[in-house]
Length: 436
Image (cartoon, rainbow, N blue to C red; front, side, top):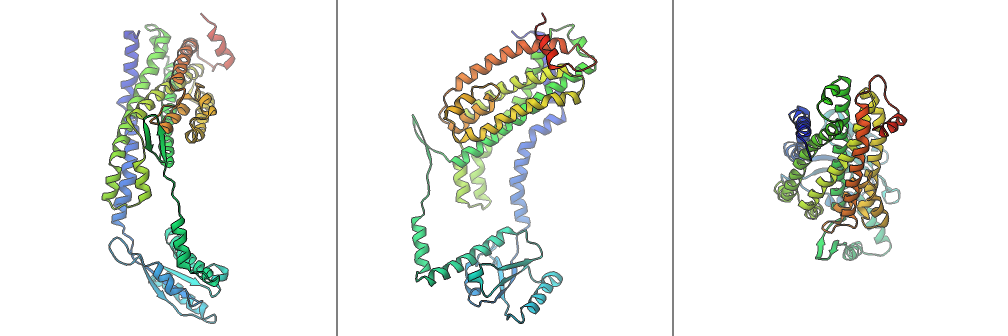
């Protein structure tokens, strides 16, 4: 039963943080970041429309220029040509002089954006020189490389007596795409391995971040009350175990509030992402396919809340014990590193589990309480709409472990919060457990 005193602690811990600027900013930061990222791409893409690139081409071979221009005849969104190519004649004797003149136009006059020098032996060397004021436009360089590679490849095929168009047509006809679907008891579900892995990564990362953030918040709260001698007054009217549970549950409410806002925003964002991208002119079939196959359903969201709660309570109890053992936040930071390391191990295991959620290794690892929150949830997110084996067993083990941890850590907390002067060692903390 939750007593009135414990309820008062929960309310104080929740409301004292809920009203802070840090919580408000932290809650809104993820939706704002997403809006800024996608909104910024479209806004700046509209404001800073690329202009036609003036490119001077020196074709020392004499057979490449015309084909190269044909393969780069793209236009921008406003309909103007993407590239304006100018053929510049040069011989081996005059090429240095011609390059010097072009570089002057490139740097001083700025009437050119780049220079492309195609050597006479391009079919053998398979190298060209690209010169520009900046070389950060890798997309342009990739387009030029692709066009030149096609020209050289065609030449090689023709030298072997093969027709390049027929060869390319044969390759295109033989290209096989893999259509993925998940087989369940209720039928098959179209699902992309890429979209599933990306979703699992994002969700588990958010859980990891919130568990560490709010677990450390509990530790700092304990240290602050202890250092200001507030604890002595508090424990005179409430039992230490009630104070511990109230503190953990109150901060847990903040985490669930923040996670709920994040999840609702993500659910809404996924539902409108495809029409939004289409409206702004994004026509990538690969991107649309990934968006269509993102399965962030209400059930996945519900399990995310459940396993975050279990994981947060488990680790926040450990953080609270650390706060009771130390006398300053600096000392607490030293003690908390092993805890953070254990949480991170679960996150690293997630990368493998998300790809193979039904292996025996994934099953047994997801039953270990230290790893359960992230690993078990990763298995659920990757297997949805099917629940992986051991889901409810892992939840039962976590609940039992949390109950046991609460009883043990409450004893450390009861003694530690009233001790001042020096931090306790792990050996001393273990002695506190035996105190009655």
